Image (tube, rainbow, N blue to C red; front, side, top):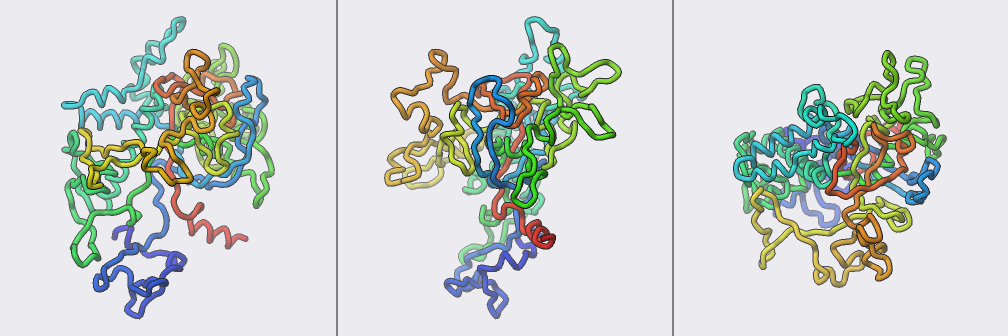
Length: 481
């Protein structure tokens, strides 16, 4: 049975009044829902969002975002500030080499013959391992592709490539859901523009191998494709915002009694030390980082963190959300454009700098344009003319809002007066090459989105829709109280 027709908690029918015939009825018009006799407006029964592959629900809330460690760099770019983050989903661990190789294989299989540049564009830069005064050639040749490193975090991926991976993952997961629900058939022969794309499917520009479309209550049609209103397809995978990443890393859900935070964390774990204080693992490191000059892993016979370079993505103890390596191993890209005074500028609910508002490209009649050569719907920036009369925004590109091009006196001239421009992206967390200072969730650094390193990886996030915690979890909490 398809998820869209599953039994639901009675709470979700608070807006419906059961009619004598058994059909749900609108409590504002009195007309039946899902009734072909009166037009067929459809309201699907829905419980809550399915958890996508690899994700963990991060229950949102308020927290003090910013510095938890002394400001030894004197940058003053992470001033503490209270914000609220909505609930969202986040990957349990960093994206591993095997996950990225799956992506590369798919690109080569679908686009490799006619559009080989698509595959080449996605390749990690393995030369990031090279150093003028170190012998790292084995990592250049082996780290990405040798099976010994399958579960190690992918590195050499820039911010743009990480975003492309998240978009690809969205389509593959939603395609798998439609196959599971009996709507599409498996089609291993997809090539070039004939590949599943979520946006193209929703606007009717992807047919695929249809197994069984949904029944349509509209009396003028028999069947229809899945719509967003059905709740079957998942929201987009994406990079987490800086606020989301920092909130998830701190995981203060394990340090609260009702609304009181009993202990402010300096790292993703309790206490102000980086060693395990339990009897079983006393003295062992809680993350993969550089303890000091020339010390990447400890002494032979007792390799303290057991990792000279990145460790497998499921290593060390997870934090209170169940997330691995939110401190150490590799630093991670987030969505935000870097500005030193972001804490003063950004909203206090879901803070984020980097919005470039877009809309789907349409023709003169308002119809969605054809897909591009890779089967993707084309998006363009919204225009100021389209936004006339709006109060919440006017321009499409808001990366510089309140800081940069908005002022004739404050302009980031990259390479002349600053290392910043709209391509500077934030990355968070310490890595295998960093000292413990950078493992504090509040620390923040930046790098050009077109550059990559041997110590920056990424993980994906997804928006949570509906209840912040899920109706079933809310019932259990109320029961305990």
